[in-house]
Image 1 (tube, rainbow, N blue to C red):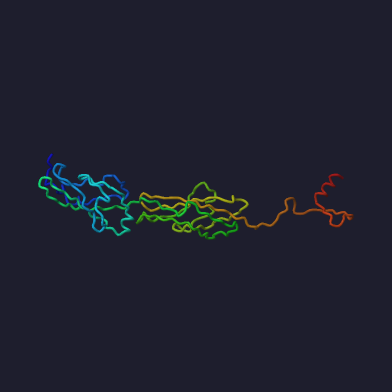
Image 2: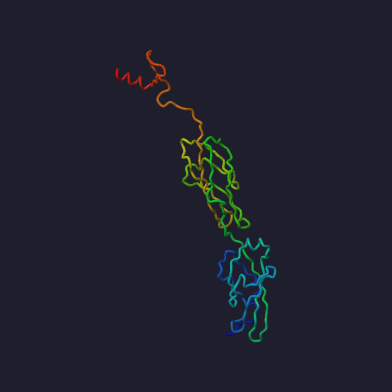
Length: 264
């Protein structure tokens, strides 16, 4: 089969030399079918390099099977740009016309596209807080809660919020703000009427599209404080009759009087 057009030239406009690839493309996937004129009986191809600035040849990241370009190893946008590698970056296909052995270099540009491929990551899966039951309302409870997102741009920014789950104690707290994970107490605590330990769920949700999120547990332990006066459990007053014959150091209980009344 003979191709139409001059072998080792682009089939269409030079704009087709620009290729885009999402950063979450899996290794082994087809990146692009290069529009180079020629059949396997007319031409042969190989990658020469993708950028002298990166100091690597094209086969480090890509495999070229005739005109099909496959991803060889992952390319992460954040890693790539943090190393100041160029984007878009250049790679060259060396195309040989088999009939006369002439060699033609075809220049391509690949634009690595950033995607939201990382959710925010909490520094811990669970955070422990000890809290006195007498903590005043509106107290700011500083925490070590912290999350980060390795994505760039809007995908790398996120907001915190408390998950409205089945915990009956969510309403006791709020966050200082969507960017500060410290807690503010908004309802009075009482060790005697609440469970001594309970969990809240905090969520970090990024602003990418689509949005990604992750969760962590805030485990709160209430500390009992001696903040109540002793109470008598029968009556606020007692009548006690004492015999004049009672000896010194005799222990007399109110219940003794009750028993004597019953016997009499």
